[in-house]
Amino acid sequence: MSNIVEEFNEYREKMNDAILEDNNKIIKRIFNLDTNAFTEGALDKKTKELLGLVASTVLRCDDCVKYHLEASHKAGLTKEEVVEALSIATLVGGTIVIPHLRRAYEYWDAVEKQS
Image (cartoon, rainbow, N blue to C red; front, side):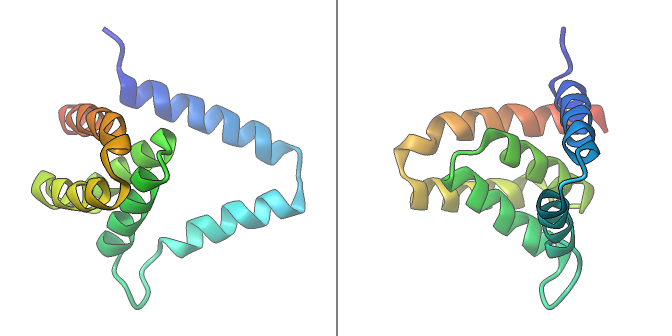
Protein backbone atom coordinates (compact mmCIF):
# COMPACT_ATOMS: atom_id res chain seq x y z
CA MET A 1 0.00 0.00 0.00
CA SER A 2 1.36 3.41 -0.91
CA ASN A 3 2.08 6.07 1.67
CA ILE A 4 0.47 9.23 0.30
CA VAL A 5 2.23 11.46 2.84
CA GLU A 6 5.73 10.20 1.99
CA GLU A 7 5.01 10.23 -1.74
CA PHE A 8 3.72 13.80 -1.61
CA ASN A 9 6.65 15.05 0.47
CA GLU A 10 9.27 13.30 -1.68
CA TYR A 11 7.77 14.68 -4.89
CA ARG A 12 7.38 18.18 -3.43
CA GLU A 13 10.98 18.24 -2.20
CA LYS A 14 12.34 16.87 -5.49
CA MET A 15 10.46 19.41 -7.59
CA ASN A 16 11.16 22.34 -5.26
CA ASP A 17 14.86 21.49 -5.48
CA ALA A 18 14.64 21.39 -9.29
CA ILE A 19 12.80 24.71 -9.39
CA LEU A 20 15.22 26.44 -7.02
CA GLU A 21 18.26 25.05 -8.88
CA ASP A 22 17.40 27.36 -11.77
CA ASN A 23 18.22 30.22 -9.42
CA ASN A 24 15.41 32.46 -10.66
CA LYS A 25 15.35 35.48 -8.36
CA ILE A 26 11.59 36.04 -8.61
CA ILE A 27 10.71 32.41 -7.86
CA LYS A 28 13.17 32.31 -4.96
CA ARG A 29 11.64 35.46 -3.51
CA ILE A 30 8.12 34.04 -3.83
CA PHE A 31 9.20 30.83 -2.05
CA ASN A 32 10.86 32.91 0.67
CA LEU A 33 7.81 35.14 1.07
CA ASP A 34 5.59 32.07 1.38
CA THR A 35 7.85 30.59 4.09
CA ASN A 36 8.03 33.84 6.04
CA ALA A 37 4.29 34.52 5.82
CA PHE A 38 3.55 31.44 7.93
CA THR A 39 5.94 32.22 10.79
CA GLU A 40 4.76 33.59 14.14
CA GLY A 41 3.66 37.21 14.00
CA ALA A 42 0.57 39.09 15.12
CA LEU A 43 -1.19 35.81 14.34
CA ASP A 44 0.13 32.57 15.77
CA LYS A 45 1.29 29.73 13.52
CA LYS A 46 -1.84 27.64 14.15
CA THR A 47 -4.13 30.44 13.01
CA LYS A 48 -2.02 31.09 9.93
CA GLU A 49 -2.07 27.40 8.99
CA LEU A 50 -5.85 27.30 9.32
CA LEU A 51 -6.11 30.40 7.13
CA GLY A 52 -3.84 28.74 4.57
CA LEU A 53 -5.92 25.56 4.72
CA VAL A 54 -9.20 27.40 4.19
CA ALA A 55 -7.84 29.49 1.32
CA SER A 56 -6.26 26.43 -0.31
CA THR A 57 -9.50 24.46 -0.04
CA VAL A 58 -11.61 27.27 -1.49
CA LEU A 59 -9.06 27.70 -4.31
CA ARG A 60 -9.18 23.89 -4.82
CA CYS A 61 -5.42 23.36 -4.64
CA ASP A 62 -4.96 19.78 -3.42
CA ASP A 63 -1.18 20.14 -3.05
CA CYS A 64 -1.68 23.25 -0.93
CA VAL A 65 -4.35 21.52 1.17
CA LYS A 66 -1.97 18.61 1.81
CA TYR A 67 0.84 20.97 2.76
CA HIS A 68 -1.33 22.92 5.20
CA LEU A 69 -2.86 19.78 6.70
CA GLU A 70 0.58 18.43 7.53
CA ALA A 71 1.78 21.82 8.80
CA SER A 72 -1.40 22.09 10.92
CA HIS A 73 -0.72 18.68 12.43
CA LYS A 74 2.90 19.61 13.16
CA ALA A 75 1.70 22.87 14.76
CA GLY A 76 -0.44 20.82 17.16
CA LEU A 77 -3.89 21.43 15.77
CA THR A 78 -6.49 18.76 16.50
CA LYS A 79 -8.68 17.01 13.97
CA GLU A 80 -11.67 18.87 15.42
CA GLU A 81 -10.01 22.24 14.80
CA VAL A 82 -9.01 21.26 11.27
CA VAL A 83 -12.47 19.89 10.47
CA GLU A 84 -14.07 23.10 11.71
CA ALA A 85 -11.82 25.13 9.41
CA LEU A 86 -12.63 22.76 6.54
CA SER A 87 -16.34 23.23 7.26
CA ILE A 88 -15.92 26.99 6.82
CA ALA A 89 -14.00 26.38 3.59
CA THR A 90 -16.81 24.16 2.31
CA LEU A 91 -19.42 26.76 3.25
CA VAL A 92 -17.49 29.54 1.50
CA GLY A 93 -16.37 27.45 -1.46
CA GLY A 94 -19.63 25.62 -2.00
CA THR A 95 -20.29 22.05 -3.01
CA ILE A 96 -17.57 22.17 -5.69
CA VAL A 97 -14.96 21.80 -2.90
CA ILE A 98 -16.48 18.55 -1.56
CA PRO A 99 -14.08 16.36 -3.62
CA HIS A 100 -11.19 18.33 -2.08
CA LEU A 101 -12.76 17.87 1.35
CA ARG A 102 -12.77 14.10 0.78
CA ARG A 103 -9.10 14.12 -0.15
CA ALA A 104 -8.34 16.36 2.84
CA TYR A 105 -9.94 13.84 5.21
CA GLU A 106 -7.97 11.03 3.61
CA TYR A 107 -4.71 12.96 3.88
CA TRP A 108 -5.29 14.04 7.49
CA ASP A 109 -5.89 10.40 8.46
CA ALA A 110 -2.64 9.44 6.71
CA VAL A 111 -0.73 12.20 8.52
CA GLU A 112 -2.13 11.05 11.87
CA LYS A 113 -1.19 7.43 11.15
CA GLN A 114 2.33 8.46 10.16
CA SER A 115 2.99 10.25 13.47
